[in-house]
Image (tube, rainbow, N blue to C red):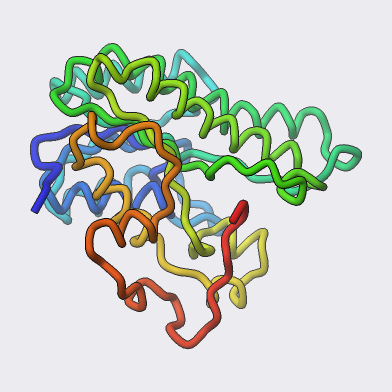
Amino acid sequence: MRSLAGKTLFVTGSSRGIGKAIALRAARDGAAVVLAAKTVAPDPKLPGTIHSAAEEVEAAGGRALPVPCDVRDEAQVKAAVKAAVETFGRLDILVNNASAINLRGTLELPVARFDLLFAVNARAAFVCSKACLPHLLESDNPHILNISPPLNTDPKWFRGIAPYTLTKYGMTMLALGMAGEFRDRGLAANALWPKTGIATAAVRNLLGGEEAVRRCRRPEIVADAAHAVLTRPAGLCTGRCLLDEEVLREEGISDFSSYAVDPGADLMPDFFL
């Protein structure tokens, strides 16, 4: 029974969806969680704020620090990391979960939207990692986990969506690079991605509505896989592109029916798989 008790996690994009699910799973172990996200006021299209997520974390048994943070802003990220260390005295884990999605092609996507994709995805993973690393390297089992896909050069994952693909693959490449750079200093860095669609606001609002959600799994499958990775010895699990289902199979779990939104529906494969 590996546990995150006593650990401090810094989770970006944690006001809802996968980020919040990862935070809640850690909270059930009694971990401290820094909820770094932009949403501080309720939005009818995007349920959840850092404050409501913090209440859920504490109700689940963890300690929470909600910090308004735009991951595109280096100063805000540094301030959030500083607040985390001042509040909890340590930083053990970074989860780069915050993400932007836009599935338009080269001619259709405005440059400003490309800049947003790059800033929230690849650049933010770098900025947050750079800010957290000095503290992570003092931990006894430090991990960086990027929620990003396995690398695949099949042209179908670039055709028509190359800007988005570029920025998500950038997150994965950063994880692999840091795995090599910091292996000798005891830090693990990995990428984790869902094998199927996950019931999030992005799926509901951008990728097919309620019918698409019905063919998804709940975010808890990614959270359970993340927990398994983050509780492994850093030296034994680093530099990998992981899928949630593969991780759980390695943990001896083979029945995933409890994660389905609708157990009778055909599951929708996720992007890049």
